Image 1 (cartoon, rainbow, N blue to C red):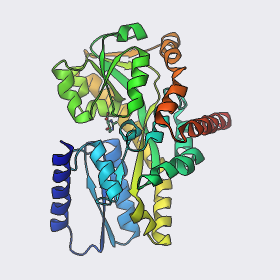
Image 2 (image 1 turned 180 degrees about the vertical axis):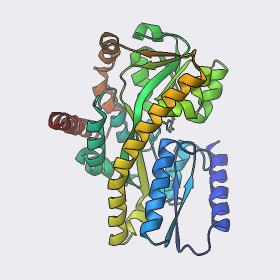
Image 3 (image 1 turned 90 degrees about the horizontal axis):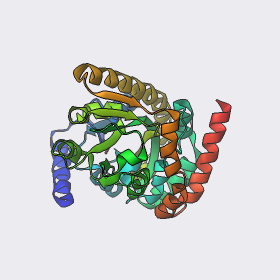
Image 4 (image 1 turned 30 degrees about the vertical axis):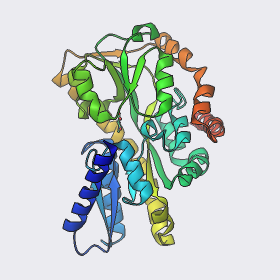
Length: 341
Ligand code: 6CS
C-alpha cells in the first residue's frame, strides 16, 4: 500500500510541475496531514502567502492536502528524501521515524494553560536544539512546533472512568507509545492512519477515537459517535519539518526570512486554532443536537492521570535515544513558563 501511495505521490508532484507557473524560479512544496481549511492548511496557506510576498514571487509554494501525496508516514519519507521541501509530521505519527519526538505524547506533559504551551512550543531549547538533532540525523530539519487544540475523546458510551474503557476499541495515531498509553488508560488501542477512522467507526470496527474538536468536525467523526468527552488530556501538537539538504542549501538571507516567518506564524496559528475549535464545537451542537458533551470533573480526570503517571519512564524507554533528557528539560521549561505566567 505504501508503495502504491508513493507512486501516487510521484505522479502528483510530476503533474504539479508540468502545469506549474513557468515564471516561478523556484517551487517549494509543502504537504500537510489535514483537509483544506483545517489548522495545518491555515498554517500552510499563511506560510505560502508570506514566502511569496517576501521573495517578490521568486518562490512559489505549492500546498498538498491530506491524501494527495499519501498517508502521514509517506509525507515524512518524501520530505527526508527531498521530493518535497516541507511537511507536517505530527508526533502522533512520527514515532517510528523519529522515536524521540514521542516525548510530546507523554500524557499530561503539557500545561493546562494554552499560553504556556504556546510559549514553550515556540521557544523551547529542548525542542529546537536537542530534539532537532534527532530530526537532523534522519534527514529532517525541525522548522516549527505548534498546538492544534485540546484533545477530545469521542465514543458511543458515556465514558467517565478507566473501567468504562474496558473493551473499547480506541483508535490512536500510529506512534508506538500511544498503544502503551491508551492501554494504561484502560482501553483496547488500535493504531491506524486517520483516513480509515470514519469507516472504522461507522462499521463498528472501532468504538472511539481522540482528536481536537475542529478535526472531529472536519473528518465528520461526530456523525458516527454519540458522545464528545473532555478528559483534560493535553493539546494535540504538530511539527513542521524541512528537508535537510534544502535547508542547508538556502542562502543566509532566505533562512533568516523563514525564521522570521516562523515567529509570525506562531501567533497567527495560535489564534486560528482557537477560533476554529470554538466554531466547530458550536457547529457540531447545531447539526447534531442529540450528541452529548461530557466534561470530566477533577476527580474523574485524576483517575486517568493516576493511570498515566507511572508510564512516563516506560514511554521514554520505548522512545529511546536522548528522549529521557528531553523530557526532563521540557518539564523544567514548562514549569518555568507556568511560574512566569
Ligand atoms: O488523527 C489524526 O491522525 C490526525 N489528526 C489531526 C488533528 N491532524 C492530522 C492527524 O494525522
